[in-house]
View 1 (cartoon, rainbow, N blue to C red):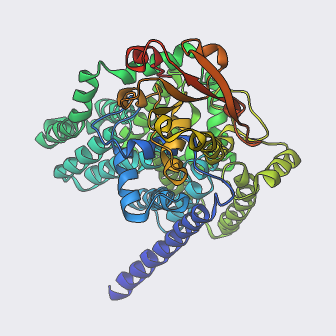
View 2 (view 1 turned 180 degrees about the vertical axis):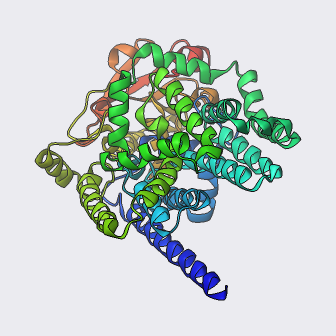
Length: 514
């Protein structure tokens, strides 16, 4: 008996060590990456939002702004500092996939395989390197999946409270939590797990999630649901790359690395056909429901990414069973080796470990590039990388003209950015160059208003001369033209004087929710 307990303890410790090693590798990769790059455009916006904490924003719930604020208070706002929490979240995702495999009965190989599949997925390498909602989203989705597995496994219905807490926080992180949550409900209803609805705890959990989400819901109601208006504007504009179902699934396979396809397909098989997976079938239906809704919305490939760690965990358990025969041991080592080599070859396309010039040469040499998610003209770099260049240089050029103005004119001079990247860059780098906070009509900057400026003196970023007809005089005073930036971030900088009507009257017309 003692020998059996000792063996089990050693196995758990061995599995834990393997998973910990994989998590550390992922953490180190993200801490190392990005040294040749700058702030991502969305990061500039979230940092600006962290200075305007509220219960909601035009394009997201409040949690990402709170996380950005906490990170800035604890670590500062250097690039390395703001990437620390995303890197930790990415490593936590590795551990969570392994924990799901363990709860489903997986031993060392299954736990290591689930963790490894998360590590090598190109999409996760890309997302986990940036301070965005997307890096934290899988923790809430898969945290709920893990809790559901524990409820089924132990029969402890009180665990639904943890599910409600995670779901509520997930809703405050990103509204797509509604899709996965609805998928869980649908999965429960079509399986014997529907008996959970007889328990009061699941209803208490639902109420808890609703109460946590309520402040953001009320904010949207008070502001006439700007998020829905934004989504409709994006749909009408055709900004997202249209993807028919087959193209979406093909892109999703690449997003997760084609060599992990046997793992996550085995995960679906486990939930729907394996005797051991039958109690957890609700998760299989939740995945299919979530995937179907996302595909119907003509979204971006990465929207489905948060659901995959549970498939990796379940698939790893299935493969551990199928490869249990001694003569198949070589398959395990071969799979890890071949997948690691392929993942290492593809990783620089998604994780910024190469300098831009080297990346361009490497991408051409292997004949591959990042999948496009938006219909924008590209320069030498894909959008994910290009959106990290040119921001401080733009601010420095703006500051050169701003400082040349007479002091009494500077005090009245607004800096207007046509999008939140330009405005966010001024807000972040501006203090270094003596600039005031920017104004903009883009996303939540519209709600922050003109900051008391009248429009008699405005430096304008990202607009054309023809768009400035309301100005008495317009002159070009600089140019943003970083060679690696997105083409639409190459623009003339104009100085506008005598705006008529005044800025406060003109403000409703500058709203740009797209």
